[in-house]
Length: 140
Image (cartoon, rainbow, N blue to C red):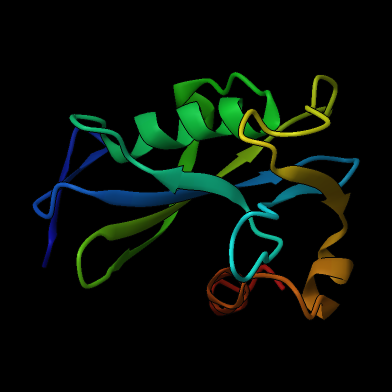
């Protein structure tokens, strides 16, 4: 199956994760766009795991680096897992009372903007895989 579930932490047999976090708040949903990428889609904050890092650790780190939020482990819930050719993709969700502290830019220069679910649903430049997943989950 490609992954093992142990102590509510995902341990990939493939050794690599791609992770993203769907951050929900009263102000909206922050998305990031990396203008250096060949196809700069708006997407949920996230990225690749580092050596020895589990999926939840990777998404907590990426949320800080890209958005500026220090997420608590207990408030970050796994909502989707997908085995891909050379890694496991994991989408997490967290709910924040406020987006106070949201970075203006990610530490690697990512653009950050807050959108409503309705805006995301209609966005032609929202990452297709993220769109497919949240549609499949019934979020949009």
